[in-house]
Amino acid sequence: MTTNKSKVVIVGCGLVGSSTAFSLLTQGVCDEIMMVDINQEKALGEVLDLKDCVEYLNRNTKVYQGNYEDCGDADIIVITAGAPPRQGQSRLDTLEASAKITRSIVKPIMESGFDGIFLIISNPVDIIAHYVQILSGLPKNQVIGTGTALDSARLKNFIAELIHVDPRSVYAFSMGEHGDSQMVPWSAVTVAGKPFYDIIRDNPELVGDVDLDSLVMKTAQEGWEILNRKGTTYYGVATTAVGVIKAILHNENRIIPVSTLLEGEYGEKDVYCGVPVVLNRTGASDVLEIHMTGQELTRFKESAKVIREYTHKIMEF
Image 1 (cartoon, rainbow, N blue to C red):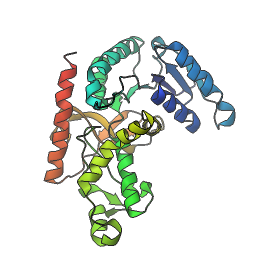
Image 2 (image 1 turned 45 degrees about the vertical axis):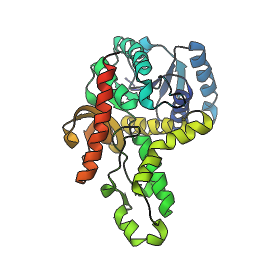
Image 3 (image 1 turned 120 degrees about the vertical axis):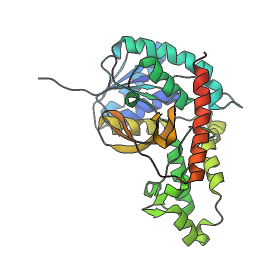
């Protein structure tokens, strides 16, 4: 008799990594959670704290500390380790430091025999995800960045607050870079199937004179709004990551805008961008191509250009 246990490894036990583990644990997403950090005492401390939760949860998930050599049988490895931006920096300013950390992580993981799925949270996430794909040699469907999944959740919140509905009734994607150049294909945004443009036209007393470009900018800047108040962000991105993990492990075929390698979609090649992707047990199984207006496609390509320029720079470090 054989048993198939689902195992998720979290590399980096800072606030994002520990919050991801906590969200995995409380939602009962997998059988095993393994914590890895260069600071082994920190990793052990997180493990001990997380194990204390099990008594009052619906599932006895095994939580333990491990090392890179223990990654060979993992289904998903979440990389959260990286260099957080300091005040006045952008996510792209952390590129060199994050590249060095990424190299030190991926090589020993691949030496363990790992052949599962990488999920990258570390910023700049689109570029680091591409770098992991190159370093690991894994197929593109097995290396995913959280991309604009969190941005899209923020966008849906803003739209929902504007028109007083549940954000889960809003269907909208932020796309491109997880950063300042991201864009929104407004022509594809709907609420319960009704185009958002029609809602604006039909409800001037409710929506008012909404500035869609400002809404995109607000979405892109929301992370900094949080950082400026509490020092960093972690709950939102951790729960976003768990949503992606759940879609993969449970073979949901759920569409989430994550960062994946484009190979002709949207007229772009050899660049990782946040786009709507079908997620299932194979990872990023397919890219959903939204029909954009000419102006929207131009903005998407401008965002892809920003990512591509910095992707070329990472190879120099």
